[in-house]
Length: 450
Image (tube, rainbow, N blue to C red; front, top):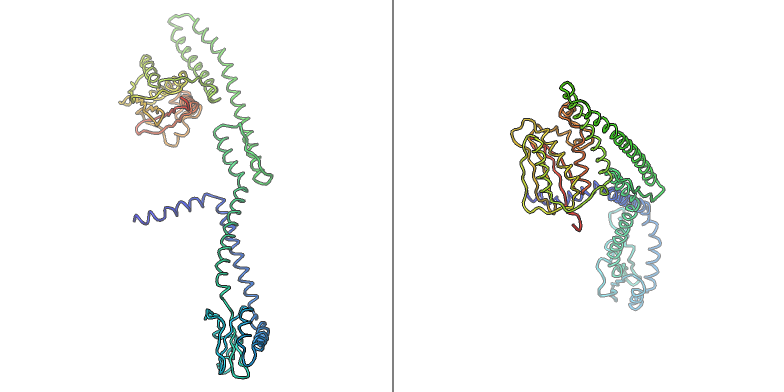
């Protein structure tokens, strides 16, 4: 079983590359088409030219043999026969009562005709060979083709043909690669647009269909960018405009008399205003982080210290359940924006404690070495989330259970901001079901020069 698994490994890789490479398939198609056309052409021409060529050439060959034998003379002259063998690509053999001679001691046996060009007669006997004659004095003269000069010719032609085919294949691949280069540009550009980078359009290198496709994709990306910018601008403007009315409403609420009849309503109104204030701040923070690394104020920071501070603040605020810390010793310092990392830790802790439910086990926060960086893992032991919903958890305003989120005060921006903070630091962000519970993992890496 092992040899059967090892043998096709290269075959599977080659088949995978062939199935996923349009260039290779086009080159293979061109080669098969060229080979098919060549075989069809050569076969057809050979068939067409082969019909009746022996009958057409027979009189010419017979006349030529008669002239050569006449030049040798009767009785045959060895000197003339030797001169003809040297001058022409033929072999001469003379046998008879007076002269027995053949040209060239190294003459090939295959060069002598076994059956000649004679055809079987009506009685089944073969007619005299076309390449032999009998002189008047009884000598038989046989002519044969001298194959010695032609022995290496097929080998040379074969190697030359192979070299030409390889050169043509290389040229075809290079041309197809150049022809399909816009597809690489479109693929790279589509990935760049998908990641939110609209600064560099796809280069338009040609004016054919692929060039038109690149132009259309650029136009589509520009429209999407404009819509995103309009949405971002509207959201930013609304967030800015809401801050002043919220501040005035909070001041007016705090000025209400603290009578027993008004106190409960006053506290509820202050909580709602605080939630609206936090929502506006989160929206503004999301827009700032959406601008990339320019929004960060990086400095050397110890992630362990920031994590312990966040846990202590949650404990001081009376958050439940408790948090279990697991921190590996000797973690490296990282270039971090302390304010944004505190925001990430606070949102991760709030999310984990909010969804831990009635689980008996505490929320777990782990800091472990990840290559040259540090991984931060936050896990609760609650009911978790449906697998189909996991890819959407870090989207803005997405709530798997809207009623439950409203009851617990969530707006669907916590994990979204955490993902933005992680990506802005050049890290990674992932969410998975830990069975039980939900696990959020963020990895931070050392920056060059840090």
